[in-house]
Length: 201
Image (cartoon, rainbow, N blue to C red; front, side):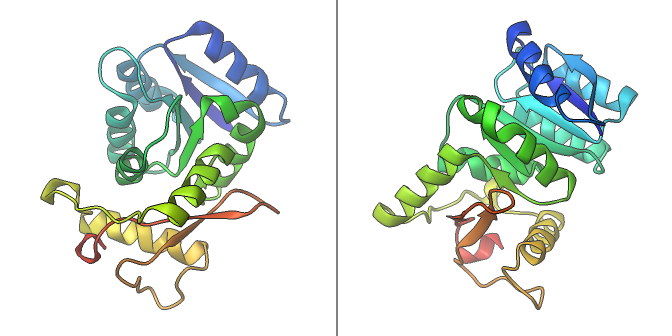
């Protein structure tokens, strides 16, 4: 598997390369210090998976994710960040990225995240999983969305495909306001997520 790593800190890139390089058959084919550079290198090296830090100089990791998916939809994406919020996870999904990993979880969860997105499956790291579970018990995850936040027809189709892979629906239809299960990897628990009001799906 060929992997592109993008982070503006050399020490972080080095650590990610160490984690990924331990897997036989995996190769970090390119490194980027900015999101703009990641977009350019993705066109040149055409990796199987790109791992993008959320906050880098220039355009954001989210913008880079959307641009890579637009020009090279075959590349699967993992977003790496130091923090989590429900709206952020929704924004990540809208770009087409399937993986969301906190940097604090990278040593334990990054390999599983890369494996999952390579198979076309969504993945959230363990602390995001725990926060989603806690939020679902204490506060409704539904939130009003601006018109610009609603999913496009292409994004809805991608969501339906993900839902089928996750066993959420069998007939291609997703019920309004339904909780979605995001697998954390083989043998691990799942976490619930809601993508917004009924007209977003």
